[in-house]
Image (cartoon, rainbow, N blue to C red; front, side, top):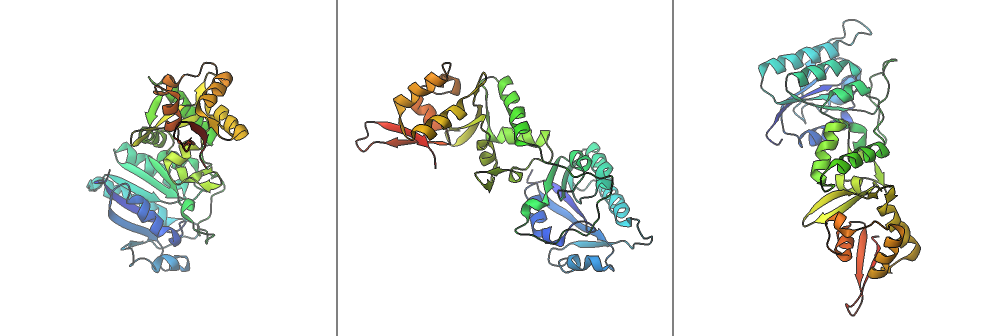
Length: 314
């Protein structure tokens, strides 16, 4: 998608200027920004922080006076402008930066016209707008520390969206793997399917070992029903489930209890716990290759090189 052209449209009424770097950095992953427009009443005191960064980021301010108190004229202006850009047919997609659910129909309309729609907003964003986008980025993932919240007020009928639980995502991936011939997929393919299924999916929303996941592989590693297996220079995702038995969980329990285990003893104990375990189910010809393929395990070689032990990676 590097050659795609995007129109960046920012609703300044409910998005903090502190996010501008993150917005541009994130959108650069999708393509080139052809339009950079920001909408608001620039005579308002609320727009002071945005005015300070307009020239630094070449943002084009689109003025809309608040003629009637309580009426958000900015929304209407941004919607009309988006449709004008749509009909000009000069972009491949739109990035709508807002936490306001009033833009739900706009996002849907742009997608109906074959345009890519990236949404960006805070965690208060209504689920309807999130679902209307091809992808949604929670800007609060980029906060280095507590910052001033946006000036916009959430409507009473709006509800906060919550991220999909890891358990729900795990079950969904598991169902795909079960239906796959060979029960394995590349990390990249899993990522593409995740983003198509959950428009707001972002691995940075989840924790692993007390830290935010910093890439998709780390997120997948954190799911205890999945194996990440090395496949040359690539990583594959396979199911850790054999029937109702979670092989990954059994392995972790064995090595937590026993520490290092000589590899043949490890295989014996694993077979006792999981009688139907077979390394060939994981595209491996022998136990050592299976262990070496798993990203959460390490193999320790003895000083004389004649024996090997298995342990959990630290």
